Image (cartoon, rainbow, N blue to C red; front, top):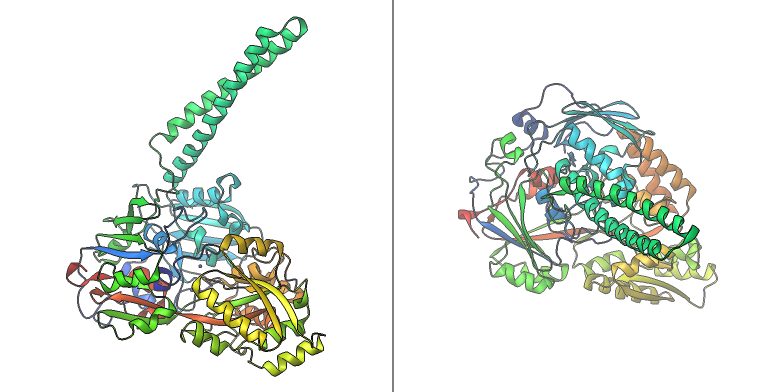
Length: 614
């Protein structure tokens, strides 16, 4: 989708992380497991359209699309970190399931259908006739290998913890797998619609494992050769009883070396011609990796055998290739767009007033599934007192922040989940701006003469502007905020040590609700580190993980939002609006259909050049 394609293409410390149609099964309901669905039937169920309602003219093949990104893609195995550009990852890889207009994991993609046999067992039918870029088949065996690869700690997959509830995955037939869970797992489909669900060639994964193992064994062989040489020297210098010990040591070293050399020989044969997946992606997606030059550009070329094009009966994708140019400066990116050197970009909010009257550009503004907010330390320091948290939150004028920092491109936030997300509690309202109440609360908490709190914020231009605005608002009620502007690595250290009172807490890509809730409010969460310990919230999080009935699960997250809202666990500011801009010769973006269908609309409707070139 365009928000995946453009808005804030980088989110270095949070991947990620990643729901249309009333006729497609929701979490916990059964999807048909009978005969394969045709492309026409699939599109009809979803309400997808490629006719004149979608676009008045026919698509045109050809041309190289140039886009710009602030940094290089990073690693190209989505399970290894860092991935700096998830949009480009989507050129190579496709997921088992995509999400609908409410961010629910309901859209069959590489997984054709699924059925809960009970709370801990799911049978999933896979799409037939899909090939990876290396020619190997996507099937039950390849998926089983991938999942087990992610679960193996030695492979270093950052996404491994997401799959912890899996007890096993079984191959039932060439295109059917059975998932067995350790306990009821309601977030399963949401996880399969996210990073672990990106299908990767098992052939390429095996070669990558062999390549890494070959390199490791090569190092061990050299080390053991040195040990053997040292042992030979000991034998030469030894006498008497020491001689026997030295010979025994040499014999042990020789046997170990022989075994290692045999393992190295076998592994090297498997690794012959292999390429590391971190720099040579192999998926099922619409584009093939062509060339990468870190810090400069990434080139991809059209996949002429893209299964989805055949499935739906259309000659897609339309571009011959895409070049992602690394251009850190947003003003330079905009200049390139206006000059026709790149085809589209996500503009910074500060640039929006500069482009509104540019007739050479197509401008689209739409809501995203992000939450911009601030994080409290609830276990130590002044913010342990709810009166202080309330005072801070009521001192923040959300409408003024949206107007001043994002030029109006935002919706005031009430809590975690955006207002178009299926878990959003519609009964909660954004915290009111009330400086008088803030001063009264501070006095009640014993800070009638003022309060100093410490914190952090990112060092990007937008976050710096937000920090200055918040600092000024807090000062008006007698709160001094000593804020440090830091890069992501330094922020991560602050989070780990819980070395803050009040700091930045933006969350991106809010799909399955458990991921966000657990990360923020569960003791084992990736961004908690002991800063929050709300027992009611923890109980609801754990209940939400188990409840596979969609309606019941929705109510659990409504209640969770109310619990953290009433306790002022954080200060939620706004849900952003994205502004994506296309050159006038780019065609195929239907805003109405996108807002209705989101991800599936984006991935099923590639864009093209008017006349076949920019």
